Amino acid sequence: MNTSIFGNTPLHRCDYLSSKYQCQISIKKEYFNPNQTAKDRAAWYMVKDAIAKKLIKPDDILVEASSGNTGIGIAYLAKQLGYRSCIFVTQNCSKEKLRSLENLGAKIVHCDNSNGLLDKNSTQYRAWSFAQMNRNSYYTDQYNNPENSRAHYETTGPEIWQQTSGKITHFFAGLGTTGTVSGIGKYLKEKDNGIKVLGIEPKGSILAPYKATGKVPTSDTVMEKIEGIGRKFVPGIFDTMAVDQILQVERSPTVQTALAYYQHTGMLTGFSSAAILAGLEDYCRNNTVDMRDHIVLLFADYGDRYLHSLYHSLTTKNSVYD
Ligand code: PMP
Image (cartoon, rainbow, N blue to C red; front, side, top):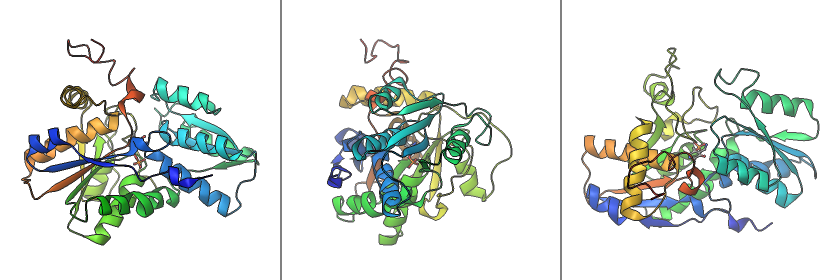
């Protein structure tokens, strides 16, 4: 398989955002990966590692717990390389992602994470127990597999550094498994410790309080639904030193931001990318930025994956369906 198809995604300056916030803003467009998502990189590294360590053989079943994008990457690699795939998905996996998984021949198992990840119906518990019971299967385990963040440390981080000629001052990414921010943040900080790395998650997620206090919060507040980001547990691969600050955003301003961005640029952002835009708005309101600053936003996927969720909910006369 020609692995040069992964990564090397473009970084484009966004004139609309640069003029709005009076600084340089560029977007790392991860939807230029083979399955239109940053998670292709993590899937590729995790499967590559399993092959190198001879942990899998032809026709084995690759297993993952995923809100969709990593699952799609795993299912794609399984199809390309002669394995099968079984993906345990959450309740809020979009219809478009489910369709992609089906097209890639994945077995899809619907799970329920509302009672936490130790619950017997959760994605992670069921993926783990499936792999325990089936000798011919391998659980890639994106929350605990260091290959997830290594993919970003070895590929996305260096790409961003090179594409900005080392002039990047701020980096924003969404937090799910934290593989993206842990890998890229570590790489950028090794290059220049002054670069500010910002993580974005929905209100009610726990990584912001965890980062601030070092403790997992005990109160169980409801988490706003923003597909792809937000967790109620600390992923094993989370590198707290790779990120300076975690901003929490709400769903409603995120949806409004997606519509405004569409009106100005004609681009449909993914759900987590819209959350980054909402976080950027908060950041620029509370901090001083100027033309010497070069902010890079990582857009993990594209909005056509959320036509029935993020964009369908827009019923104003400016809706993308008008
Ligand atoms: N955005 C989207 C659309 C995603 O699918 C994910 C992964 N669930 C993320 C952001 C977060 O990436 P990571 O898992 O590397 O933290």
